[in-house]
Image (cartoon, rainbow, N blue to C red; front, side, top):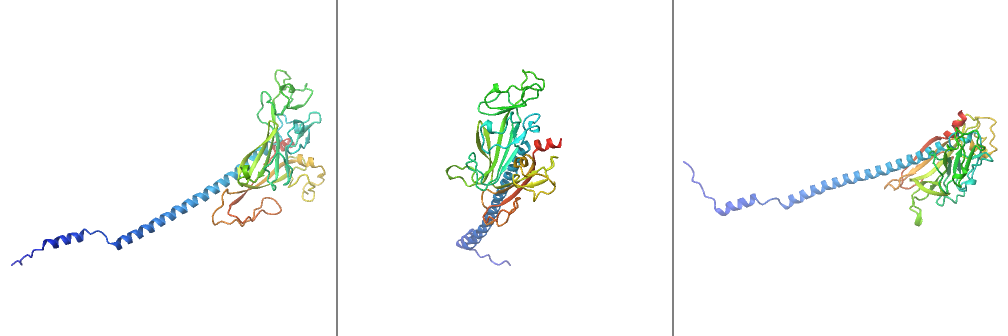
Length: 354
C-alpha cells in the first residue's frame, strides 16, 4: 500500500528556488578577486621584466652600433689618407706638416716649387690648440687625415682648393694646387692634348676628435660624441659621427726599414722612441716629420658607453685602450665596451711595397 503523498506548501517551494539562484557569497567573491589580483600582479611583473630587458637590449645594441660605426668611419678615412691623385705625387715629393687648422690653400702643404705634399696622417695629444674645433674635449686626442677627393670634377668650384697632377712629359710642372679658378689648371693627360686636361680633385682635410656633447648649444646635452671636422669652402665644418664615444686612443705603426710594414707602434711618433723600438737598429728618430711620414698603420681604440644609465648597475671595471694606465673605474650607471682595429695607410704602405 502506497504511503500518502504530503503536499509541500507553495512558499517553501519558492524558498528552495531562491536558495538555488542566490549566486556567490561575499567570501567567494573576495577569494576570486584575490586570485585575479595575484594573476594580474604576475602578468604586470612579467611585462615589466620584458620591457626592462627590451630597453637594456636596445641600449646595448645602440652602443655596439655606434662603436662599430665610429671605428669603421675612421678606418675608411685612414685607408684613403695620402691619396693625391692618379700616379700619387707623394712618391717623388717631400712631406710637409701643415698647421692643424690651416685653411689657406698656400698653407695646406702642397707646393710644386718646393716639391712638397702634406703628410697623409698626423695626430695630436690632448691639449693641442685647435681654434677650428671649438667643442674639442680637453682630454681628446686628435687625428687628421689629408688627401684629395676620390671623385674628379669637371670644373673647380669657388672657394675650394684643387689638385691637378700632370701625366704629360711636356708639362713644365708636375702638379698644380690652387683655389683661384679654372685658369690656374692647364696640365694635361698622357696624350699631351690641350683638349684633354688632367683630372681636378678637391683637397680634403678631415679631423676626428671627441666632444663632450652631441648638440653643444645652450650648455650642451652632455653626450660624449666622436665628431669629424671637414674643410669645406675654405672653412672647417663639424658634424657628429657617433654618440656615446667617450675616449679615443691612437697608436701609430712606424715603418723603420721602408718595406711598408709597421715595425713598432708608438703613442707619439714625434718623440724619440729608440728605447722601445729596437727591432730595426740604426733608425734615426731625430726628425719628427720623417717619423710621421713613416707611419703606415694605426691602431685605433675607442671606449663607447650607452647613452642612458642602467638602473641598479655600477660600472666599477677598468678598460684597456692602449695607454699605460687603464681607463676607469667610472662608478656610474653606464655600460661600456672597448672597440679596437688596425687600419692601414694603403697609399703610403703600398708605394713602399712596390
